[in-house]
Each structure stands twice: as C-alpha cells, then as structure tokens.
Length: 193
Image (cartoon, rainbow, N blue to C red; front, side, top):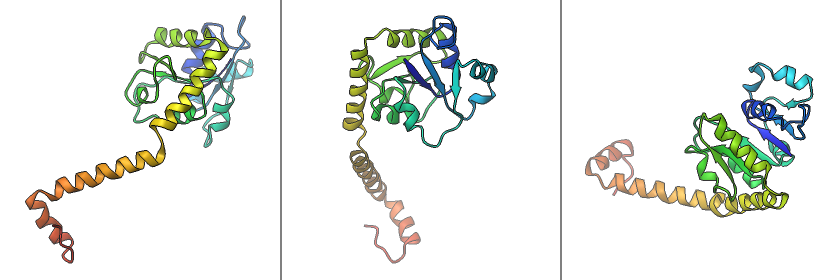
C-alpha cells in the first residue's frame, strides 16, 4: 500500500506499527507533504533510511494523491478541507479526523474512515482497518468517494446554491427600513426598494 499524508505524524505511527517499507516487516510506502513537516525531528533520518519520501510543500498535490492508495489527514481543526475534496475527486479513500471540515467530505466506511482528533490509538485503528480491507473494498471506497464529490460537491451546483443564499440574505436585509436609508445614502442614484 502507499499512503500520502499531510504531515509526519501519521507516518510516525505507520513506522511504529511496522507498516512502512524499510522497517522490519513493513511493505508500504509513505509519502509526506506539507510545509511544516520538515521541521519535525526524525524526518531527515527516516528519509535517509528510505522509510519515507518527503516532498515538502507542493503547489500541485494531484500526482502524489494519484499514486497513493489513500489519503490521511490528521487535523485538529479545519474550515472545509479542500484536500479531502481533491483526494476524493481523484477516487482515493480518505482517512481523516472526525471534526467539522473533514466529516462533510466523508461517508464513514463508504468513502473513507474517520478517527478521533488528537487520539493516536483511534488513528492507528483507522489505518489498520483500511490496511485490512480487501483490494476490491479499497477500490469501491475510492469509487464511492468520487461519486460523492460528483453528487454533493459539484461546482456549478454549489455556486448556484451560494448565489441563492446571498440573494436571499440581501432581500432580508433590504426589508429592514433603516437599511433603505443607508443604501440611499451610499447609492443616491439607485432606488433600494
């Protein structure tokens, strides 16, 4: 198996559990990206031993995600994690923290797996669960992830929904009488009603 992780922490766990090539009994390859991972202790030594391949900050992560069997995102907090959308759109299962910003992009056991935030044992359980899935189950999880992105995160649908919400908010605001006075002051040539 091949994993692409957004930092070294999941890789350290894989190494501890002897899942990474270069560690006795390991057969997987760990690829690490991100702009903060290089400063973590052990990265250079692990790379020199061939345990990981550190790629540093990447402007285009698509080739790395495409060459991985899954994407791992241990995070303490997120807005909407675009990297989950990108990995899923590429047809890769995602293993991510069970937090807002991540869970919206994952259907548990269907498109990926989640784990408790700041809980190493929970992360390990998710990684082991994924490792123990059959090849067909992993493929189906990735196909389901892609289908979810097409259905729920279509750009045009999201833009249309956002436009509708913005227009509705503007209509609610213009119904407040005092707002019309402000709008007349700002736009004297326009009638706000």
